[in-house]
Amino acid sequence: MKRILITGVDGQIGSELFELFRHDEGVDHVVGLDIRPPQKRQWRENGLFELCDATDKDALRQVIKKYEITNIFHLVGILSAKGENNPDLAWHVNMTSLKNILELAQEFDLKIFWPSSIAVFGLSAPRENTPQNTILDPTTIYGITKVSGELLCNYYHQKFAIDVRSIRFPGIISYDTPPGGGTTDYAVDMFYYALRQEKYTCFVSPETTLPMMYMADAIKSILDIMRAEKQQIKVRTSYNVTGISFSARELELEICKHFPGFSCSYKPDYRQRIADSWPCTIDDSLARQQWNWQHQFDLAKITADMIENLKSKATV
Ligand code: SER
Image (tube, rainbow, N blue to C red; front, side, top):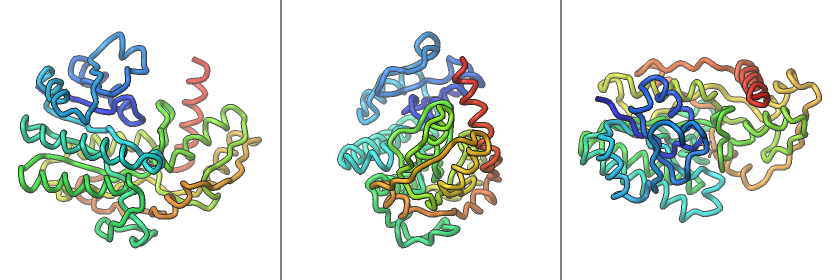
């Protein structure tokens, strides 16, 4: 019987994946794990949730044993901007937890999903159509943990045959749980300000262009890669995967089509340098060829869907 564990379940991706699996697999087949108590009432009232620090290997082992876990979606992580404010913590949380998960995967024969990021790229990689295989010289501690994590995943796959699969995520736009501490967070923040009819001060310049993806596509990419046959997964570091790319100004203008009074001012801070070190567009043809990756949401669709959902959330 398949039993799923999602670490970092209270985060942007974890919370949506948890809901999906609870619905599709049944609440008794998926366990949420986080260092904080669950924010959603329905998780407290019904289903399986464990308060646990993923850097504590023994505690993780107990959870895996208790629920006879078979698959882990390891989503614990400190993102790029927050990581710059506390590099030691970012290294400790991101690396120790991943190493724990990989060691436990070996002990219990688990299948693993782990997210990497466009933050693996630095100033030496081409910024347009950034290839799968290129120089990886990240400038952030977050990016360094992602490169190291990718290599660790590949090592555990080569040496111990661990079935670990990974995607280099771009910025993810969603309406359910906001992201926290990322450089791409402005793309989500803008929507919340527009809905409240407030002006938004954007922390990157209007021409800053980054690869982005709608949450529905991010979830689809995770399910697609995890459901693919083993032999389709030829990259065991992490796959380039993307949806679309747009500038901060293009997003502002798209939101203006729905809220004509909306506007942004631009006041770049330390996150601008991070954004400037990342790709503008990504070549994800390998994921498209090897496990049929296809995104579904473009900027117009993302914007319309975000606004519709945020509006209905506001009226609940
Ligand atoms: N969204 C992430 C960040 O901004 C990138 O993986 O840190």
